[in-house]
Image 1 (cartoon, rainbow, N blue to C red):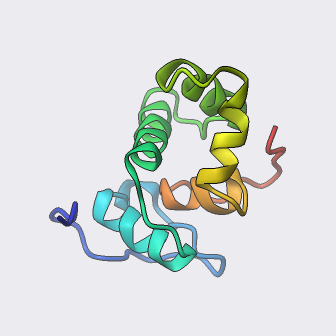
Image 2: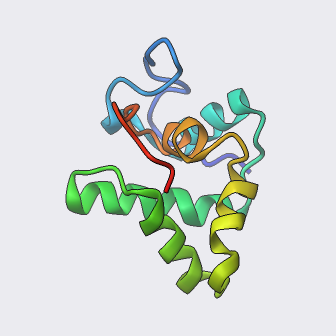
Length: 113
């Protein structure tokens, strides 16, 4: 079942594949970006992506990886395994894959925490 809604399949991206305008993101866009990364989105991916988008909407900032790990600790009850789970979901890294698929601009300087 496609999660695509009214927006276009893939809005403009920069040279690295990050959305130029995060407001262009929707779940259909996330699916297209995930396919480019070779990721099939599961329920756990969607939990992370929706958390990241909610955080962005509320704070107007990209959530640091530690906040996403904290969310996974609580939401999935993973405790100390949350960090490992984040990198299982996005094996090439939080910035390279999670931020990109969540429709964030590429952070200028970043620690994957």
